Length: 244
Image 1 (cartoon, helix red, strand yellow):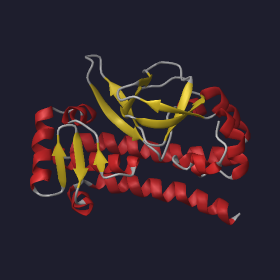
Image 2 (cartoon, rainbow, N blue to C red):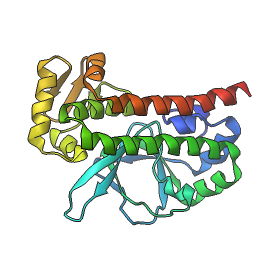
Image 3 (spheres, rainbow, N blue to C red):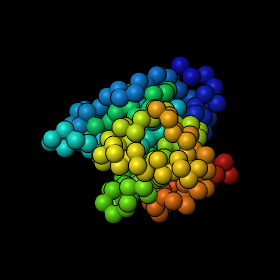
């Protein structure tokens, strides 16, 4: 059980809650460690728990009949999983799987629905988050269709470091290829170019961002668009609540 509001600050949505809201939610939140590739909810499966990551990164994956999949959104400390429970969906339309191991707060879907129904603040916060998340999903689809792989890779790396608040990523080139729905050879070539140009350093299972501004300059406009939408929507609500 959580005892201090500062315990919630690892996740931006929980950290945005005023004191009376977090006091209501805290007894229902359990800090859990998530393993890489751990399946949290499969496509079509009923949502029993939602997760608010603090250091973990969770992927929303669209899976095809042949078993291939592609990432449609990444959820880190800025958000949560399981938003369909708040819209009456009850089940996930896509697979929810841990991409990078770490910690998250777990809460029963039923408890969140109950608080969502009676809290104006929580409804406002979650609706704004859903808006930002839908922007990420839509822009990811457009990016995967229209932009070159090297630009997609830059976008993906920037999103990852934003989610974990670190320039060091524990990730394989195969995982990146799986997330982007491309061949590993393409990722190897694109990452090698970024390495040679001094933007990243990559070794087996590890990537370190050396020049973030340079990486942003190489990325497509999709990264900036999604980041601006998250920055525009969520902090504004926190600031407004502080003024009140």
